[in-house]
Image (cartoon, rainbow, N blue to C red; front, side, top):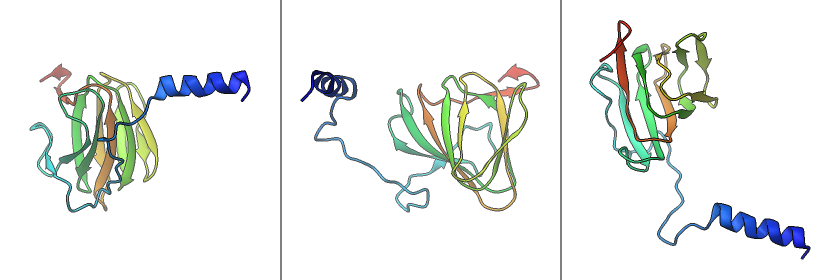
Length: 149
């Protein structure tokens, strides 16, 4: 083995580490009957649900599904964490402050910066199910009339 190959192999071990024997790989569909859906924060109207896929909502590095029915408004709010998202169902319009509205289609990736207020609308038709990966603990802080509530 060449020295550079050996160095790269050792670096990859130290950077990525190894999964522990107790850690299992996951594959979870948004249609899985075993998902435990729970209500969203109170400022979002009834019909919004989240399901934890991996992690603890009070800890860093959380993965969730976020689901709302078609023709549904998600009020203006922000998160203290950035969001990494992939839409798995429906069509979702998202508007971040001082930016143009973006329409997310199934299979598309979206990124939301930390603390940037936004609102969204799930278009009529299929429910919108969004995979969201949070870096920091889960929160959603509502904004009404320009004020944090």
